[in-house]
Length: 275
Image (cartoon, rainbow, N blue to C red):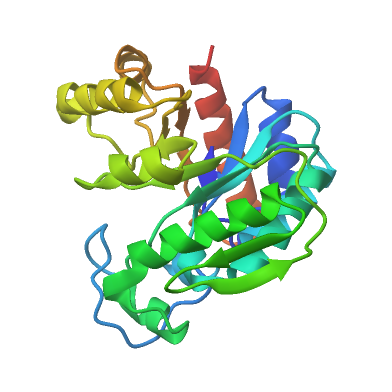
């Protein structure tokens, strides 16, 4: 399950309880630090940007609360815009959430699309993918070494002490579906999160999954973000080599209890699809 968790929808603890109670395996949250009121970046979904984009919880704070009230489900981001974070600070945040969750955290990452949002963080949109790479590599160094150091174009620090360390190096799942995404997955990822794979493009997608696995020197799980919630579609994902699907849980159309009840009914329907 993946959702834009908002301040006007279901709260983090109620949602986490509901997902685990229904026997689902994972709950991932999206991220936008903010949305500039004046922007030129078109929304990839087309049309006006939905309300939910400006109302999301900080995913790491929310996931920490979810970790404290669950025992089994995987918790993660899909995706965190890591280029917009200080990597030293984010490494500690991720390690902390991982420890609170008992090693259930997965860090999905992506370069983002909103150029005005990036600019407010001092990120050059034209170099966002290169910056994302360095931020991930720097965090992996911090998680893995007692005296980590990193020297790159965007991130540069001499040996540091930073604890807590995570229970294990958190899996980094690389988001995206562009022509070079597999290169990023193979270099510094532990898995791939393609976005909304259309059923009529399943043959091409299956070939990319096969290529990824053939080229990888380690296990390389594939998680589809925004899977089509139909039984036949799930069979197609399995045949293509997908390990996990994330159904997108839409935000409520109505604020308050009625909206929460609507969200839980959708969650029931999704749970009924899963074996």
